[in-house]
Image 1 (cartoon, rainbow, N blue to C red):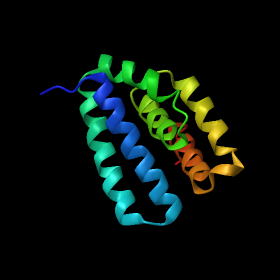
Image 2 (image 1 turned 90 degrees about the horizontal axis):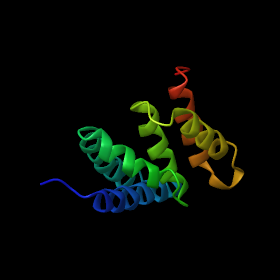
Image 3 (image 1 turned 30 degrees about the vertical axis):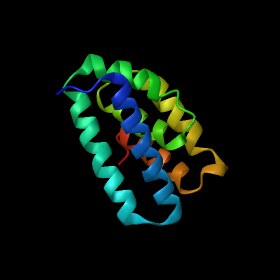
Image 4 (image 1 turned 45 degrees about the vertical axis):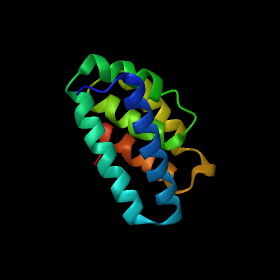
Length: 116
């Protein structure tokens, strides 16, 4: 059964928030579980690029930093709004309030530029 865009967005946001909070708390088991779910969601989204793009348009505007990090990483991966995604990651990587998440944004940005 295909998931609707709103269901995908909800699942993506939920798991990205869980993963981000677990990262900040140092709870790697919980973080890894959410990461695995996010990876499955992303693989499913890649099966329908139009659905992925529609979903990413919403996710990249999220107020949640870790949602943006994951969404921008995927956008770059499928070559969608790459410059916008890189700009968002750049802003997040320079944010002192995000702790380790700013480092995650920086690493995603470096991967996108082929520096890793």
